[in-house]
Amino acid sequence: AIGCDHAGFALKGKLMRYLGERGFRLKDMGTYSEESCDYPDIALALGRAVVSGECARGILICGTGIGMSIAANKIAGIRAACCSDTYSALFTRLHNDANVLCIGARVVGEGLAADLAEIFLTTPFENSGNHPRRVAKLSDMEKL
Ligand code: RB5
Image 1 (cartoon, rainbow, N blue to C red):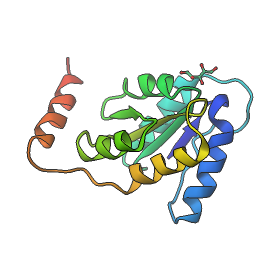
Image 2: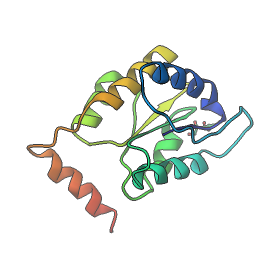
Image 3: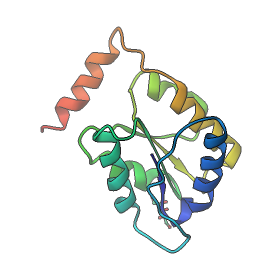
Image 4: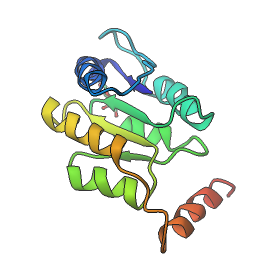
């Protein structure tokens, strides 16, 4: 699933083309124009699609990526990571099993955004050692 607010609209289009050409199947959760909208609405719709299993992972784009990540992380079952470097995009999959990547369209260029998305979508969780226990603790914290 991929979604954005007005600030991320242009980058969403570019990422959809890039990822589509590489064979990823995408569900566009909006927004569908540069008209101003509220990022929590998009984060909620996309988060629900990921938690329900309808979509394996999500990519959310706003101006900074931060509003989207704050919103998405309110949803039980979502582990959203706002990344602007490829090392973080790699390790948030390997160690955190992040299921939503947030990107700031006003922070990173389209080339880096494409790399972030591709790394995020192709890197598995390192499901061994300390990592599963720590991710389970994240899930437990949703019950606090
Ligand atoms: C919209 O101007 C901007 O606030 C939004 O895209 C995002 O950066 C919020 O975190």
